[in-house]
Length: 66
Image (spheres, rainbow, N blue to C red):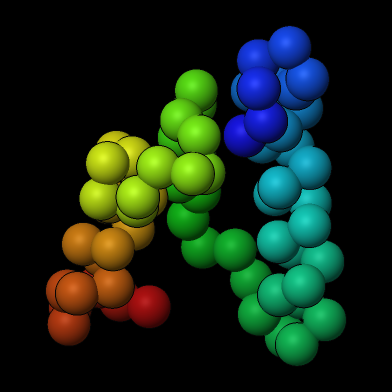
């Protein structure tokens, strides 16, 4: 997410989801989960952002279903 003054969480989430779908669907993929850290800078390490950390935990789980 950009600074609060430049982009609100709703529009940020919408464009990120739209872009993700565009990239994935062109290769036959699909979005199966949405993880979005509101108010967290992407400059923070993934482990310090709750939803990014949750994504890493999901990848580590061999029974994740993905």
